[in-house]
Image (cartoon, rainbow, N blue to C red; front, side, top):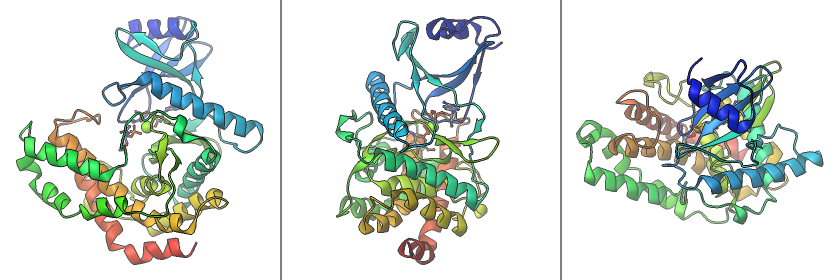
Length: 356
Ligand code: ADP
Ligand code: GN1
Ligand code: MG
């Protein structure tokens, strides 16, 4: 068994027995350390929160539990049918535990499920988009002012641009020279930040803000949607960003760190499935301006996440987890290739939004 002392400590905290105890990593999240803790009887997800990214883990857990409560009330009234990720208390009734100064929480494990890194078909994309749409619809009457801004300005592209320029100027790990082309490319795209800042008639909504495909679970048996997960960044935002992150993570047939750039393209049928799947549950609430703003989201998210990977690369890989030295730069090239293909396909993709 791996990590025995840690497993025993976590088991003690969350009330599992030491018999048959196992602790193994699951998933491919870039931020937290996520593991499955099992004894002979039960399984739960334990997560070490990344406190560099989330300096206030108490507020993060508080936010997620407020959403949990709201969704549970919707579920009781048959207004939400996906499973809800619930926090589990320690034996002392706390929702956050301290182990050697590190912050851990436990979540209900959603068994019989899987997450995807690359979408397999238009049907799968529609199922995912519908799940994120149902989540957004269930939250549209949630008072998002209750949510603590765990990462302020999370989708503020202008702010991300300033941070990027600062890292280029400082060049703390001498990587500017190896990323010259990508940096020059960024400097040509900053008009997008103005487009986003000048957006009018698009309401702020309670948003998930991290609708990448591996932040939802499919049922292993039937392949329907089981749950929307990773509620860490739920804050007020724009649906266009949640739509854009689905485009970013579903449309390409390659994972976000694939080096097979010739293949990094927007699959039109997947884009169409995302529009259909997301718009349907939102139909009673969404405005036409808001729907048309999804085009901006489709451009902004691939670019902005590429910019964030590049910023992190220039800063020495402190934010996103990386598996090798150039991992962030590989992600940058991939995301910028995708962004360029989104722009290339403007007329056909936009017409799909206009047709809704
Ligand atoms: P991160 O914040 O690092 O992205 P996530 O909360 O998204 O972490 O979890 C990472 C991965 O772990 C998910 O993509 C999923 O595969 C798996 N996972 C997380 N929570 C659960 C859960 N409650 N049940 C089953 N699998 C989960
Ligand atoms: C991170 O935590 P994860 O892997 O679901 C990041 C997202 C990025 C994504 C890029 C809190 O998401 O914003 O879009 O990586 N989460 C945070 O894959 O920064
Ligand atoms: Mg995640």
